[in-house]
Amino acid sequence: MADGTQGVTAPYLHVADKIRARIADGTWPPGHRLPSRSALGAEFGGFGDNVVRRAQEALIAEGLLEGRAGSGTYVRSPHDRRTLLRTPAPSGVADLSGLSPAGFSGTWEAESEAKLPAPPEIAERLNIDDGALCVRTQYEFLDARHRPVMVSTSWEPMELTGGTVVVLPEGGPLAGRGVAARMAHLGITVTQAVEVPRPVQLTRAQAQLLAGAIVGSLATLIARTHYDASGQPVETADILVPADRWDIAYTVPAPPGTNRR
Image (cartoon, rainbow, N blue to C red; front, side):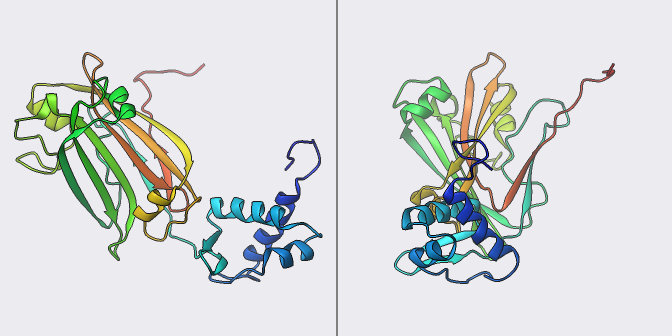
């Protein structure tokens, strides 16, 4: 792998490869504390602390290392991987409202808060005025040890649901039924959901929401928005998926009778 000049490996990538090899062959097992940066730099070719620091940051982002404040850098214990399956509903409508991943054996918890002003980014995604009142629902998906392993924050405009029995997504007669079913109760037909995944590095606040997550490690942030038949957004959510724990799979149905030539 080259960085900047073709055929020339950047020093930090060279150091990262050396550390990665020690982890792969078991020389440094999970929980092992790495030597100091100066010691690593001297051992791997006479590199300075900044080169080693950049290599460690890259491996933290990959999920191979973790930094512990005041203690040092350690080989991270691996996590079991699961698949987050995003699939259209049987009707063919892209109903991706379900947050719980297919085959998920844990539990989930949700907490809603009404009459919150929409932040500018959320207002833009919902096509409403800045500060318009919304219901925000925060979801945590918990593993068998009751640790959060995926989180999501959903926003719905109160001008649609306020004063109705479906104002709280996890309350009332349609609790937990999803966006499409709840909006249908109000006479609103959800026709599509659009999801935009993008890679992110966990901030401190995001890492605190996820059990064992490390600041700077890689995650996928899925920005999901549901639209009605007129194209108006009716719900938007950010789904935060740690990259070292989840594979994300989308199924895309082919039109019937399609022939490839």
